[in-house]
Amino acid sequence: MYGLILAGGSGSRLWPLSRELYPKQLLNIQNTESLLQATFLRLKEYIPSENIISMTGVKHLSNVRYQLSSITKEPVVLSEPISKNTAPAIVLGTKFITETSNDDPVILVVPSDHMIKDTKNFIEIW
Image (tube, rainbow, N blue to C red; front, side, top):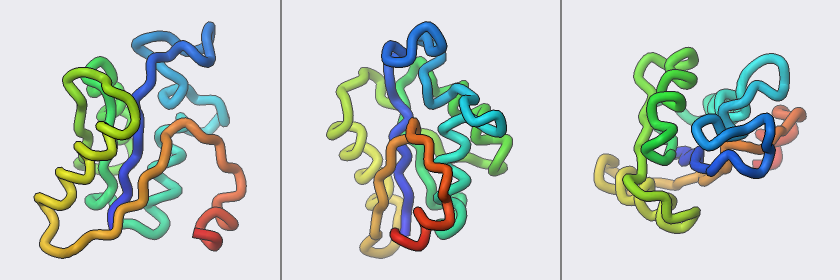
């Protein structure tokens, strides 16, 4: 199983907290970790870290990699050279997973900017 975290975004929806180079998924809204880090930790409950891929824009690549490196030694982070929204990001991530996997992978695609407080229930439902 693989997890594909969509960590793009322009930083405009939660302005003035978020900015173009620091969108909401990188913000620490929960007082413990960023929304991106919380998403990774949720997936890590049932998907190995090396099977969790984060998709982001080239502007956010270093910040996403930096935040995830506090959770896992070698985060897999891919960036789109030009942001083309959700569907192309999923296609690029899926292409990477299918080309590097030896099997017919099951892929869970999740946004990086949702706040889910009941992680136990989230995992049970999924």
